[in-house]
Image (tube, rainbow, N blue to C red; front, side, top):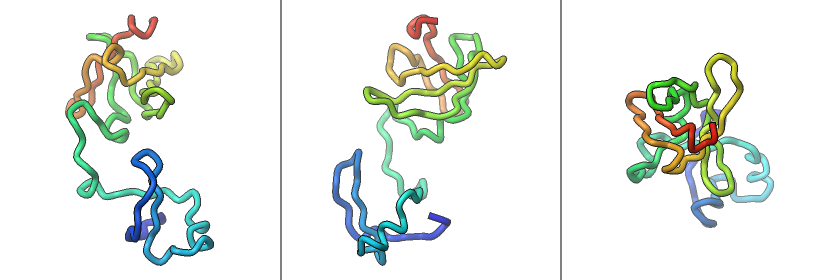
Length: 125
């Protein structure tokens, strides 16, 4: 929100679709002014992740391999109806590949090494 720090007055809704009321923005008109604004939380205040869970920004830019063969790099994570998927930009301008974040498609993720190993045969490649 333009670098401004705001405080949450009230939280309702669900984990997937939260509803927030910010201090100083209690009226409908004040809330409308925030429509489309991106909200962020400092990393030190983010909830801890379970093993096998990752923040989307941690995976963006990771190199993607099938074994020892480099495939490309993650552009971003996309939310799909049934799961999240990695949008991979293939090396050598060969287009893009969507990799669902499921155990059969993703063998391993090493955030520290910036490397993700996928199974192209599972993906029909």
